Structures are given as C-alpha cells and as structure tokens.
Length: 254
Ligand code: 9D3
Image (cartoon, rainbow, N blue to C red; front, side):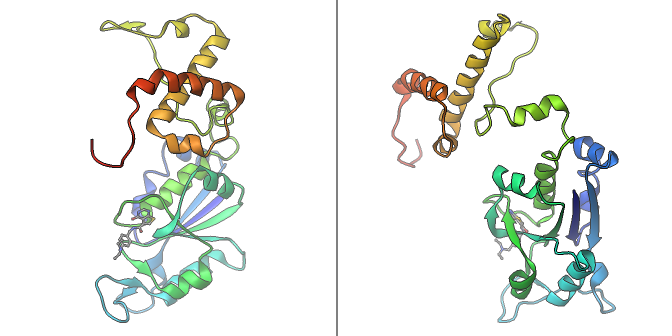
C-alpha cells in the first residue's frame, strides 16, 4: 500500500513513520510513504500558501490554487482517494481503518491550525476525517494516526503472533488484564487460574475479564457488538457481581 502525505511540516513525519513496526514494514517494502511539502506548490516569490478569509474573521485559509496544484501533481491521472484531516470530519475508527486498508493507495492532506478553501473540499476531497473531539494544532498527528492504524492491518506488518489477536474472539472488547513474573509481588498474587495451565479455563477467565473491563469502562462498545451465547452468560454473571455497585448515570458529577 502507498501513502502520499501533503503537509506544510514534512519534518514532523520522519521520526514516527521511520521507526518500530511501521519503519520496519517500510524497509521490508510492505508499505511506502511519500511526504510532499505543500509549500513547494506555491507560486509567488514569498511561497505563500494561505490567505485571510473572505468575509473577515480570525485565522487563515489554505489557498485552493496551491492545494489543487499539489493534489494533482501527486495524484497524476490516477483516481487515488484524497483524505482531508479536519476537526469537521467523520470520527476515525477501527472499522474505517479496515476499509482504508483495502485500498492500494491513499493521499492524506493535513492543514496546520487552519481550514482549506471550501471549493477544494467540495471537488477534491473524498473523505474528511477527524481523530476525536479535541483540538490539535494541525492535521499532521491525525495523518500519522491514520497511517499507523491502517498500516498495521496490512498483511505481514505485524508478526504472526500479534496479528492472530486481531481476528480473535475479543475483537471489539477491551483487553483482558495481563500478568508476568513474579507470581507474588508485594503480597499481590497473580490469579490462580493463569498458573493452572488449564487452557480452556484461562480462555474463559480472560473473556470474562475483557467483558468486565468493557462493561465498566466502555459500555458503549458492548451496545454496538453482537455477543455470543457464552459472552451473554459471562456478562450476566458480571452484572450480578457488580449490581451492588450499580449507580444511575445522571451525567452529573459524583
Ligand atoms: C476548531 C477551531 N477551528 C476554528 C477556528 C480552527 C482550527 C483549529 C485546529 C482548525 C484546525 C485545527 C487543527 N486540527 C486539525 O487539523 C485536525 C484535528 C483536530 O484538531 N482534532 C481531531 N482531529 C483532527 S484531524 C485534523
């Protein structure tokens, strides 16, 4: 898979996309990334890329002529989709990451504390994505988040051991708690069952703990997931166990 990233700050991308899992996957040719400086497509002698908004107001707007020159230079005559990272975008999630991972090539466009001219959004942007409801200084980190989330889904990028986790039954649930040696640490013990070597009991324990965490921390995830018979049974046990702690969520501070 190939990613083209259009940005005003190319140097922000070098570190994060050159190390660890993504760096190695690039070395192995499993994915490729080109970073393009939007300023290289400016035409006047000051290399201006943005201007004040028509109608007035604070902030600056990226010029459509510069942006479209950059997009068309990168895209050539391919029909590669353009993703614009923006606070107004649809919130990026795992489902979307999986959909994007099926594409051979993507162009990611990042602004930096500014908007793009609306005409670019209308005609050249295929997807507008946000990474969540908080304000950043630019779309660079969001672009890296999208590349990271999509790239790890590509065949061969994760080792076999970790990739098998992805299609495991615990997809869509929070992770179960993990323990390692020593078995006793400052009088805190590792749950017996994990030392037992009884694989079926361990599997069920982990599934229950994953369900417990999801129920307590992210009940919204449970509502969107279809549960197996076993999961419904374990969840029923958990609701019994936790019913004494039950509290109506009034959305008021405690
Ligand atoms: C909400 C403030 N905007 C109104 C004047 C200006 C503005 C602030 C910050 C415009 C862009 C930005 C930079 N953020 C992104 O480009 C961005 C982003 C984000 O801030 N949060 C979550 N996802 C994303 S994707 C791109």
